[in-house]
Figure 1 (cartoon, one colour):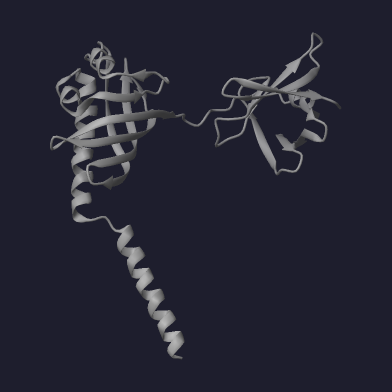
Figure 2 (cartoon, one colour):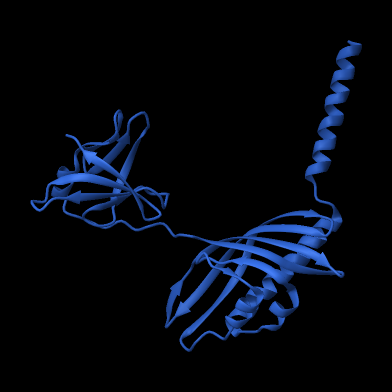
Length: 246
């Protein structure tokens, strides 16, 4: 019993230490608030083309990767700031902030929710952003930022159900690696060998995709007679060719 008590005491102490490690200190909480304030100030300055916050909080040696995969310098960022043109308006709001803070270094990961109005039409893109800050000479500086766009869910279109039948068959990537298209009622079902079934929905007459993901479009190639001869598994505009074998 004494041994059991010692083991339980050790387990309790271990849990308490882990719990303490997962709780942010007051200083870290305040730092996160300050960095969110700085980040939001930078975003608020974009629509009006206000360069002052960007000159103040952005490090001269920043590495900034934007949503178009361009790596920008501080000069690039400042040169690109100007008020939105006539007919445009919008705002960006930080949300879902997570932080990792260690002394004079901090990393923030968050979603930036944009509302943009273009001649009365509303766009709502979402960006996933990771920012790195260093405290230099007593002041936080944005030293790196990586921005990616989170695409909205694609919308499917109605196509002639008669087209579905032409897709049915087995497609081969390599010996023993196949993808089979079947119909279940009005649904097009795909299944790669060794994997679960997945429903494919139409983007157009020859392009299908899975809901909930932006990867793995299925593009069906046809010969001059309209017969399907192959399936292209498209990933970031790179194609894997699956030949139709039956």
